[in-house]
Length: 121
Image (cartoon, rainbow, N blue to C red; front, side, top):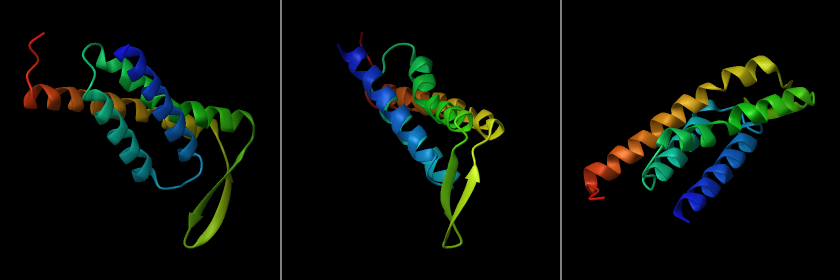
Protein backbone atom coordinates (compact mmCIF):
# COMPACT_ATOMS: atom_id res chain seq x y z
CA UNK A 1 0.00 0.00 0.00
CA UNK A 2 2.79 2.40 0.95
CA UNK A 3 4.66 1.75 -2.31
CA UNK A 4 1.53 2.43 -4.37
CA UNK A 5 0.95 5.68 -2.53
CA UNK A 6 4.58 6.75 -3.06
CA UNK A 7 4.26 5.84 -6.74
CA UNK A 8 1.09 7.92 -7.05
CA UNK A 9 2.67 10.89 -5.26
CA UNK A 10 5.74 10.62 -7.51
CA UNK A 11 3.61 10.63 -10.66
CA UNK A 12 1.62 13.64 -9.40
CA UNK A 13 4.85 15.53 -8.66
CA UNK A 14 6.19 14.59 -12.10
CA UNK A 15 3.13 15.79 -14.00
CA UNK A 16 2.80 19.00 -12.00
CA UNK A 17 6.47 20.00 -12.27
CA UNK A 18 6.58 19.09 -15.96
CA UNK A 19 3.50 21.21 -16.65
CA UNK A 20 4.72 24.13 -14.57
CA UNK A 21 8.12 24.07 -16.30
CA UNK A 22 6.38 24.84 -19.60
CA UNK A 23 4.89 28.03 -18.16
CA UNK A 24 7.92 29.73 -16.64
CA UNK A 25 11.43 30.62 -17.72
CA UNK A 26 13.36 30.31 -14.47
CA UNK A 27 15.29 27.05 -14.38
CA UNK A 28 16.23 27.36 -10.68
CA UNK A 29 12.55 27.29 -9.75
CA UNK A 30 12.06 24.01 -11.61
CA UNK A 31 15.22 22.53 -10.12
CA UNK A 32 14.15 23.59 -6.64
CA UNK A 33 10.75 21.95 -7.06
CA UNK A 34 12.41 18.78 -8.39
CA UNK A 35 14.84 18.62 -5.49
CA UNK A 36 12.17 19.31 -2.88
CA UNK A 37 9.76 16.73 -4.31
CA UNK A 38 12.41 14.05 -4.72
CA UNK A 39 13.85 14.69 -1.25
CA UNK A 40 10.38 14.40 0.28
CA UNK A 41 9.70 11.11 -1.51
CA UNK A 42 13.18 9.89 -0.57
CA UNK A 43 12.34 10.26 3.11
CA UNK A 44 9.76 7.47 2.74
CA UNK A 45 11.36 5.14 0.16
CA UNK A 46 12.80 1.88 1.46
CA UNK A 47 13.89 0.12 -1.73
CA UNK A 48 14.86 1.12 -5.28
CA UNK A 49 15.05 4.89 -4.72
CA UNK A 50 16.42 5.43 -8.23
CA UNK A 51 13.06 4.33 -9.69
CA UNK A 52 11.23 7.10 -7.85
CA UNK A 53 13.88 9.60 -8.96
CA UNK A 54 13.32 8.63 -12.59
CA UNK A 55 9.55 8.85 -12.21
CA UNK A 56 9.67 12.35 -10.70
CA UNK A 57 12.30 13.65 -13.12
CA UNK A 58 10.82 12.25 -16.33
CA UNK A 59 7.91 14.71 -16.29
CA UNK A 60 10.01 17.69 -17.39
CA UNK A 61 11.47 16.18 -20.60
CA UNK A 62 8.20 14.40 -21.46
CA UNK A 63 6.28 17.68 -21.16
CA UNK A 64 8.93 19.33 -23.35
CA UNK A 65 8.68 16.64 -26.02
CA UNK A 66 4.88 16.82 -26.01
CA UNK A 67 5.03 20.61 -26.35
CA UNK A 68 7.56 20.37 -29.20
CA UNK A 69 5.60 17.70 -31.06
CA UNK A 70 2.45 19.83 -30.90
CA UNK A 71 4.35 22.98 -31.99
CA UNK A 72 3.30 24.82 -28.84
CA UNK A 73 4.33 28.36 -28.07
CA UNK A 74 5.70 28.65 -24.56
CA UNK A 75 5.30 31.85 -22.61
CA UNK A 76 7.21 33.41 -19.79
CA UNK A 77 8.08 36.74 -18.25
CA UNK A 78 11.33 38.38 -19.24
CA UNK A 79 12.22 41.90 -18.11
CA UNK A 80 8.61 42.55 -17.11
CA UNK A 81 7.13 41.59 -20.50
CA UNK A 82 5.57 38.37 -21.69
CA UNK A 83 7.74 36.61 -24.22
CA UNK A 84 6.73 33.70 -26.48
CA UNK A 85 9.00 31.13 -28.10
CA UNK A 86 8.44 27.76 -29.81
CA UNK A 87 9.09 24.56 -27.93
CA UNK A 88 11.98 22.60 -29.43
CA UNK A 89 13.16 19.00 -29.19
CA UNK A 90 16.64 20.20 -28.27
CA UNK A 91 15.49 21.98 -25.16
CA UNK A 92 13.34 18.97 -24.23
CA UNK A 93 16.37 16.70 -24.58
CA UNK A 94 18.50 19.00 -22.43
CA UNK A 95 15.85 18.92 -19.73
CA UNK A 96 16.55 15.21 -19.24
CA UNK A 97 19.23 16.42 -16.81
CA UNK A 98 16.27 16.78 -14.45
CA UNK A 99 16.32 13.02 -14.00
CA UNK A 100 19.84 13.15 -12.55
CA UNK A 101 18.79 15.93 -10.18
CA UNK A 102 15.81 13.95 -8.90
CA UNK A 103 17.81 10.74 -8.45
CA UNK A 104 20.26 12.73 -6.35
CA UNK A 105 17.38 14.29 -4.38
CA UNK A 106 15.80 10.91 -3.62
CA UNK A 107 19.10 9.47 -2.42
CA UNK A 108 19.74 12.51 -0.20
CA UNK A 109 16.28 11.94 1.30
CA UNK A 110 17.05 8.26 1.91
CA UNK A 111 20.43 9.08 3.47
CA UNK A 112 18.86 11.77 5.64
CA UNK A 113 16.23 9.35 6.94
CA UNK A 114 18.91 6.76 7.71
CA UNK A 115 21.07 9.33 9.49
CA UNK A 116 18.23 10.65 11.61
CA UNK A 117 16.53 7.34 12.37
CA UNK A 118 18.40 4.15 11.50
CA UNK A 119 16.20 1.44 10.04
CA UNK A 120 16.02 -1.79 12.00
CA UNK A 121 14.27 -3.82 9.30
